[in-house]
Image (cartoon, rainbow, N blue to C red; front, side):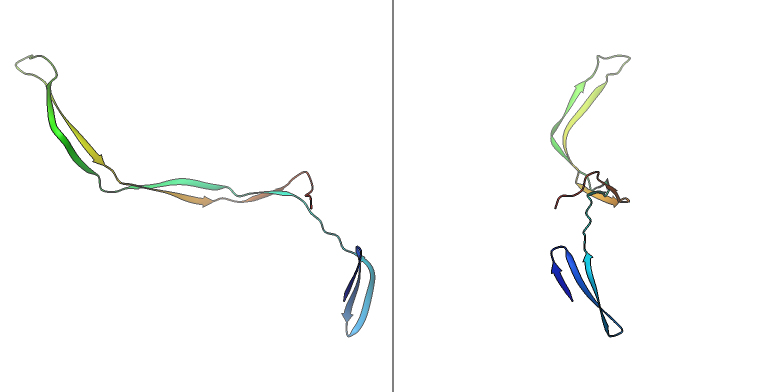
Length: 108
């Protein structure tokens, strides 16, 4: 049985069916601020799907230089739309956590 009187307590305990009373015990609560750290490593996790390509319009043919040595150099250009499906994700790995004291006490 405990009766509260300001900050002092009367505590009764049972020992082998005999009741013992302890007078004027003092209860205290300690408090300290701490910093807790949890490092988490993030790495990209990407994957590409099937790539598609679609021609846009007609090809263009251009001469690149003047005739030389019985030949000419031409260049064929085609505008195209390339569709690349990409799956973006992140993998997370938890590292060792840590704790350290802060120099000031906590406020209640």
